[in-house]
Image (cartoon, rainbow, N blue to C red; front, side, top):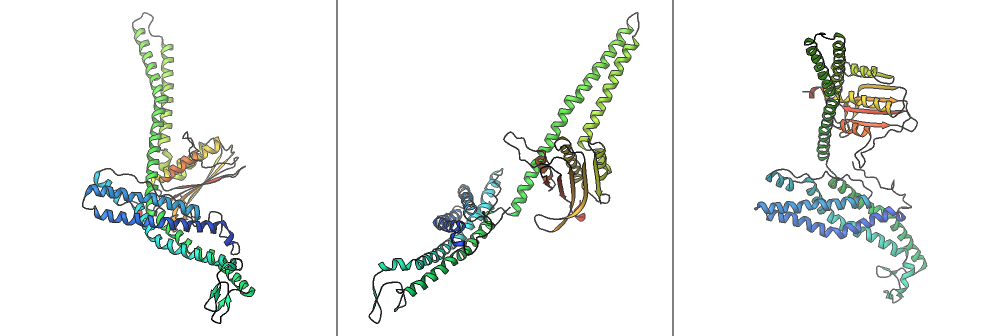
Length: 463
């Protein structure tokens, strides 16, 4: 995400612009850009020439690729300069991931788009740095010199006019000298005008630097999409692995233990049958019935646990649609949950969207029960047109709004050093797997309204 607003707010008013720190900070940027411009241009030209010179050797291309990747460091430096001095917020490009394989690694080095864009920035800003610094400095120097001419002109050497008179002061032409009070005052007024025009003229060059920094040093939309997809894929894999671990733990600690108990109880019944058949007293039917009853009860408990595990993997109610699944979830909740499903009956929702929507609502209802101290929850679900964040076009999306009357204060907190974060952060990561978003409005004292938006594919794009 890139913004072109000043760090300290709006642009300074015209009358205060020459004295505003942002104006002088931008002038400092022009100084730094001028000092770095020759070295940046030399690095860029050397990279291109060196790459062309060693193109016939594979080893040389690896070295050239390393030199090219060094442009990433230049780009990072210029990005920090833009943030610090120009008030532009530029997102960091995605880190480079080395590819596996000899030729793929080489191709990844030589085709690094971030490095090439940084080189292009270094080349095109060279003349801009020269012209911007010279024009800005000339405006500022002439303005300050004109305003203070009345003071320092007394030390200027005498000059003779064409009529033979002698004058001391700045001359315009051959016979017009600034050496009278009226002319000194006129020059001061001209200096004041130039001093107030200086920030506006400088702003033109600074604006060009901002545009180039945003256009060439920020990540492209395609790279952001790739990074987002890779992150979503990693989150999906981690979520699936965590789910499998939870199922394995539940099976090991619960179901397996109960099955072992059932096996022991059946073994005990078998021993009773064998001992009774070989004794004169016969089989103790009461004791045998008690053992079998215990085994029967344990078997029913195990079946119930297995049903709960299966329901956690994919609730059977989802087969009847999301609206029915949400109603079933509301009926099993620990506090009153009111579900309002609008337009879901005829909506052809992908199975992945239906499943993640169900589990999202389940987690939000559980959070309201555990943490919000709510007395009731309202769930509104429906298909609505929303604006696509990338293109701005209207797209269909499944929108879920979960509102509780609890104490409020809910927030998406990133994991800390120990890896612990809020459940909402984990839900945000899981929603990223289907390009979904989560928005939280939870003032202190409540109510809390959490909106989940999941874009839906176009009907003709469904496989």
